[in-house]
Image (cartoon, rainbow, N blue to C red; front, side, top):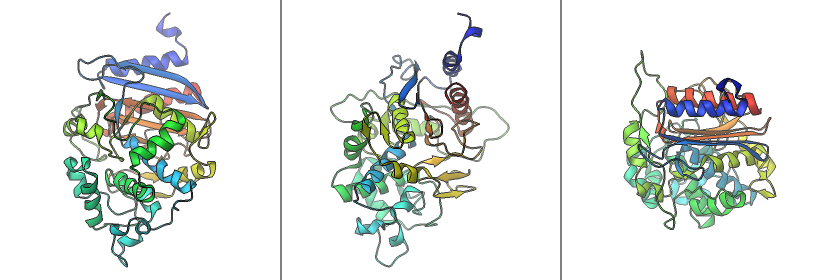
Length: 373
């Protein structure tokens, strides 16, 4: 068949392959659901430089695409009646703040909307600490909030704040709770917050790509050295640890299924992970800013997800405001459109700068929307 005769899905496959051929990453997966059905599943490239071919069950580092999984654990506890969004953190975690201080006013909703005032702390600069849960939590207990109540993206602290809340309420780690109440119920068999010791460390190898030549570098993103980030997240110790804001591992197929479940009100097939009203609450806008102090771009925050509505989104250039999802450090993105029931997940092992990453994911998102929305 001539390339000119390719239908919609085949043209998406051509675009997917073209990005691999251009060297934007070594390997990738793309999965799309429409309603409860997976309508597209693509894999290509290699697990790392000169590595084995990528397979559908190949695990990738998910970076901040982990955050909605962690948030879903908190939402599940709300459904169970074990906590409420307006509850102060200190109700469950007294050591978090001294009584009567501003920090003691931090609520569960503040954590989920990046308004806890701990956007950048010593924890962000100490990746070796992330594998020590108690040490990481201690840093946050001793940190002084800056801008409490104002939205500012929390790259690392989001996960330890939400994860410690889960541990305090349930006595279980966030990784175990996610497995029992989010991943296993909807058959996300290849996704983990903390790779189990029983499984081999065969996570795809990351590469941090240098800036391309251009007139100037956009003043957006976390400003991290991509090579250093790749080296950090290629460590087995990082894969094994529970780093619930940035260290999950999994597949595009699992992630698309998660978002398909949310787009369907928290249910897929006969299995439900969240109440319909809870999904409606978590996906609406709770905080927004025209310039997020951490990222330097506009953001609209739900309770653990990011809503569409700006030119800096990575959900496609035509994404309606109702679309919600999350991205992961210049490498991956996932989203759902509740109006059409389309859910999209794209994971790669190539960390690109914010502009390049936005361009490649928006190309695919637009192509998917054209065919399936």
